[in-house]
Length: 92
Image (cartoon, rainbow, N blue to C red; front, side):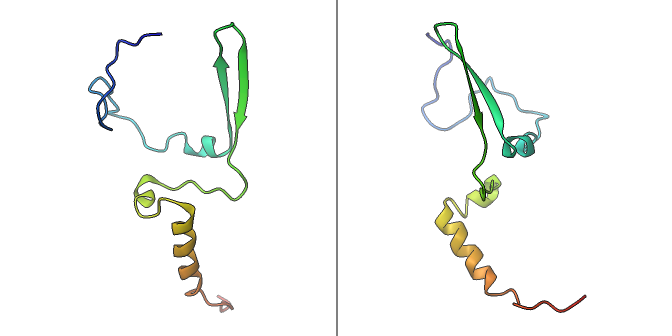
């Protein structure tokens, strides 16, 4: 199936895409709770797949991902913060 759209040579957004008025993260909560994808195949059948995050998964915001691109970097940073947390907290 041919497309009338040219693929960009880099990671730039195509000029016909307009996200003015869009809201970042609008569907993040629903996505993290799981989502279903209907895949319409060429033989007229539909494959339905449900996706959900694995237990313990955490979604990082894009600005945070710039600094912590993988699980190792996140875990290292969090372990260093854990050392700063008192083992026994004072009653408030």
